Amino acid sequence: MKAAVFHGPDQPLKLEDVPIPEISAEEALIKIAACGVCHTDLHYLEGVPTFQKPPLILGHEASGIVTQLGEKVTNVKEKDRVLIPPVLTCGSCRNCRLGRENLCRNIIMIGNSIDGAYAEYAKIPAKDLVKLPAEIPLEEASIISDAMSTPFHALKNRAGVRPGDSVVIYGVGGVGLNAVQIAAALGAFVIAVDKVDAKLEMARDLGASETINVDAENPVKAVKKITGGGADIAIEAIGIPEVMKMAYDSVRWGGRAVIVGYTHKDLTISAARLMFREIEICGSLGCRIVDYPPLVDMIRRGRLKLLVSDKMPLDKINEALEMLKQGQIKTRAIVLP
Image (cartoon, rainbow, N blue to C red):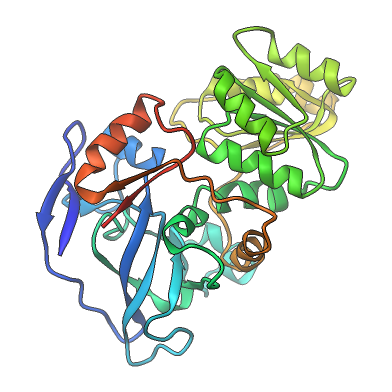
């Protein structure tokens, strides 16, 4: 099969012929329909180490068709249309037992711990596969895996958004735009913050009531003016410490800031403000498997849109990654093996 193989940082992925994976008794072989192009893959190319040393097939945001089953698999059947979660769980560690599977202590990350989905086929533990209804287009569904599930978990479980809450979202790229439409669908008053007017316009189309361009005004002051003192919840969806601090500074007394973006750099905030105003700041990682069915159902019912702007063949993966790096992807790019 064809696969885009990662051989190390600061070099392009190489399209190679590799063997089709052999599955175990509890795995399924998935013919990949599409795989989303994510900033996480850029991090690996820029030097963030993968759990498995290269060579490694990247790609963790995928959908496809079940083509072969292990002898112990009972939850899916051949020809099922499925979503592949990016994080696989053991189901037996303390965190899994507490219902926090996304923090599994034996976590397996596709395209990081094991070979991923920038390939024609991938083998996946069948217990984690999510069936897709016929109403949802298979290729576009790939972005549910990460670009939609990550902000869904952040807003529903970590932020605890309730109808009427004011939610400011810093950064309306692929994840941030989905955060906007999910927050709006949950009944929040949404403020979108970015420096690109075109993205802010899309945010309005997806449910943002107010938009702020950081190059035109101080976003913290603007948020406080709009909300009368600060947002109930702030979401940082970029991964820049300075922006994380803006999100923290934007919440009201007793508010909550949720960090979704990744950075290896440290974050400095006021401890006095944190204590005296009882502000909460928390991280958010991926999504629990249990939250995929309700998210998929919201998409099936038309409550949320699948925001795919670019479709490219697998042999254009390096071009897609460069476009992502340069900020040229409108919403989300997917590659089609």
